[in-house]
Image (cartoon, rainbow, N blue to C red):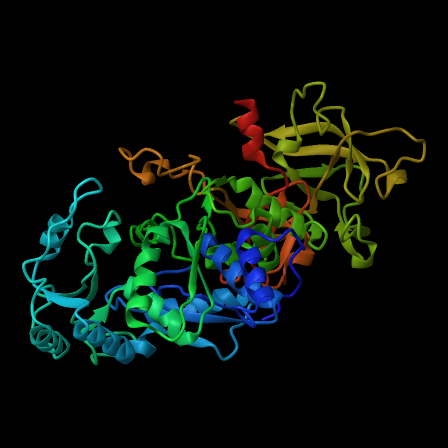
Length: 563
């Protein structure tokens, strides 16, 4: 389960301190953690934090982290989710070895434990409806009322529970509840439901069962069965910990894992709710779970993020006890930092404007040498064809440029990256006044971009050969939402904050010829533009399609500073 590179060493967080103390005192010989996703959706960046924590602790201690699917709700679970989750965890660089488990593996044991609770008077079958159970539960300031079925005899409860298992009663007609304390200040302890009737086929057990255990009941027992030492959960489960402990203590189980809560990941400009992510997919606001604008792990992978960048991001934000917000810029910086030293530099013109070098021979194709990385000479060089007709970015030319515009304009001289110095002498327009071509001259003594006479040219622009370039599609992905917290205003749907410019498609960008056969998934830097990845699905030989991973700089932070 060793990831490709070790995480940067940092002071121990509070969870790792607890584990270190338990090992030092001999409470545990080795930690056993688990990552327990529910297979009811795709994993997102918040799950990556939990994956890196649980598997990371195992890696650091040469120990074991279990992969366990808490599959107790067949109405929302599918095999495709199981497969995608396994793929995501492996892509992040972790491996559970032989320790792949499912809560459904324990259905028979969980049923037996429920029978044991009934026999000891700690569980009963209740006929209240769901709405009635909520009404009886009380409030944070008022105690609940006991169910009229709370004092059924053990024999009656056993018979009714057996009938529930046999499918004798319709969905929702009866539940099994733990008998704890209806006056408890913790609502989770007011006789919680631990089994319900659900006549739905399960993705693994088929129609074997028609009753299914609830998550809180299942989770602690699954941890116990597997010998988990430290059960790491996010803060929303803190109020559930007394129930976790009650189940294990009441059943007097042979081991008792320790539940520890940590702050979940709150990331600006996104939503972390599986329900809302599913809504985005089902209502076609995005193009599937792996849409590159989605902060799902599959979406990040398709966009071009690397597993190293996500692991480093999780290491950077750390693990704390209090909820806080992490700016999206931290995640974006992690991929910039990861790709900067290893992504080859290439040239691609997104909005092509033709340049005709009038004094360059029409039939000449000259090769110029370009560095694959300006700081890493070991990454080598490549040859680019230089021809009479080129493409540059339309934004690199202005008819009436201001003084500080260090690019091309009438009478202005600029440097073509790795090529020559050129000077604009004229330009053509169509009937609507749009510029269609720029006419320039070049200085043949300046190959490579430097002038023998020592004259200084401030502007350097990128380009591609008009004849020797390749057409490509470029998707300019941006943040899916234009509000820091799309859920902030409960009176307004989070959908109101969707960014209309989160995806801009350029159909006929011009890339240097070396990118014609780029391998799907490979990341490069388009010089002066940003980091891009060849789409793993749509990019084809001779017809590359690129996803923008991230801009070269945090344009959102700059925009906020201007505002």
